[in-house]
Length: 319
Ligand SMILES: Cc1cc2nc3c(=O)[nH]c(=O)nc-3n(C[C@H](O)[C@H](O)[C@H](O)COP(=O)(O)O)c2cc1C
Image 1 (cartoon, protein in one colour):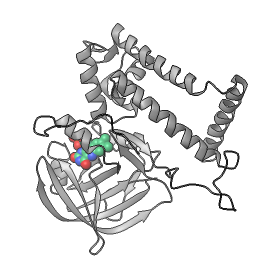
Image 2 (cartoon, rainbow, N blue to C red):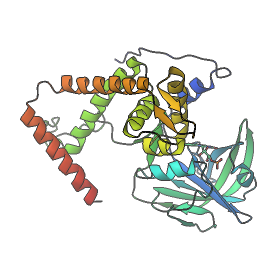
Image 3 (tube, protein in one colour):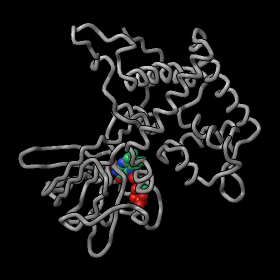
Image 4 (cartoon, rainbow, N blue to C red):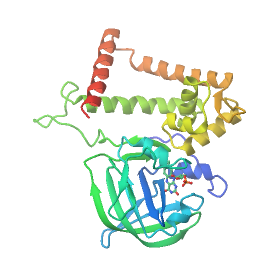
């Protein structure tokens, strides 16, 4: 049985951030939608993408009317959707930024219809424009897919305002021995044990963080700024690995509570209070970890850490 402890309610007309956070409970993939129209190239990060119809093959997405790319997409007769793979957070960050040339330093090429596609993405769909519909502050664009490509890669996930990766749920993935009995820890794969351990520890720490009154974005800002004396917004976004909206929300809250201040040159830094807040979070997370590991002997812990470090290095070199 699951018990929900906190319920946030609101009217979207007066609480647009709360509304956005509620929508963020719906996990999506992350795409780059790009076009080249009348010699002008444009691309945006979009998670409004969705499949629509198999016959005819249609997809949809929506573009904000405030996007600099809006005038181009509202006229473009074709575009390409690149479904980002789980190692492509930097690509997502770049196409969600206000960079002048988002395509510089990105590995892309023109697709069959000329629209840019992102190399190494998990999937690519080239489309002609089928129709457009008014969608409030967005324009809904429906595309007819003329060509698709899929790579054997897993897609990046976006959920609750942060990037995530998809792993089989441990409940569904109950590994069993050849006799059909559940696997003991000694028989289970290391990957599945690491996943279960991560899930359980991060869930308990998420609750601690929320109880301390911090959003995930605030906690990440405090961490990143504790490692750097001051940072401009774009760099803070890039180092946090969170989308700019999550960081913007976190900065608004932390500035209001006096934990972060904006310097005259526009950069952000921690105040004394911010350093205290960061210390509180760190202390809580360390004591939670110590409490969880209290029955494990120090030499066993040291071995576990060494094994995991080697596992990570080898997984990196095996790619
Ligand atoms: C994960 C994620 C999903 C996004 N989804 C959309 C979307 O579906 N439609 C949209 O117009 N903007 C979306 N954005 C915002 C745009 O990517 C971003 O605001 C925009 O590209 C900024 O630059 P521009 O003015 O050059 O378009 C998303 C951003 C992120 C980080």
